[in-house]
Image 1 (cartoon, rainbow, N blue to C red):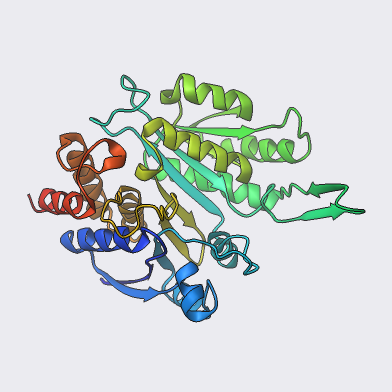
Image 2 (tube, helix red, strand yellow):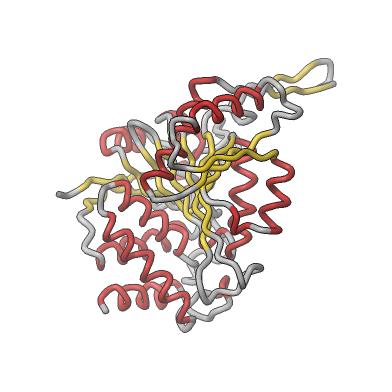
Length: 338
């Protein structure tokens, strides 16, 4: 069965890492037909909008999009193109794995980190409910939105993910000791839903203690579920534990459409030089393969990435090597073919 997938090459290093990813998926013989569409700063310069209607229509029609990093043009009215896509398609679950890669130097050489952060993607402090208080911007306020409905679906998504992937524990991160109503509601929902999953251990932890525990004993965490702002912060912290954003994929899951992406920026300083590391987008593509039911191909992709990185002879400069994008990609394709 062939799947049609919307493809956004993006800005900066985006086209380079997307090209590398498409080459690797072709080597895997993934049954994907690409429908290329535009978004970002390049689209704005050429088409007058950073998010053309054609792109929205394509994502809605295909239900899956693989996306390179985007630059949001200044002064367009978009807070973020990524956020706009997520909101338009109600991609409510942001899923960010962070796993140790053997052979790569990180801050934790003697422990195996393997955590997944499941972040509520539509509410919280990022709901966009902000007000300026006159005169002269004397003050400003942000409303933290937390509904029972959104809390239930993200917590349930975390437990279902844990069960489907054979994971053993879900940790809910909150600030209910201070945010009695919003944090309290999120915690209450988590405690209630946890009772339905007696095969999975459940615990909760306050956000400040969570940050400390992640840098002291990160190996204790498995699946983590939390609110929008806390998830944004913790997912970058988790990336730092395993080697950086260049290794970390992201998925935004909705009932009608899902987006898979590298979570790093456009890196304009190295764009066009053939130096970019495509690992984050490759791993996002692996998550996409799982999502499309091509689990064996997704596993083969991750095994090949791990093997090439562990070997150390064809890794990019951000990881301490000397290889360029093409050389690293060639090594992956050779590993897949081997």
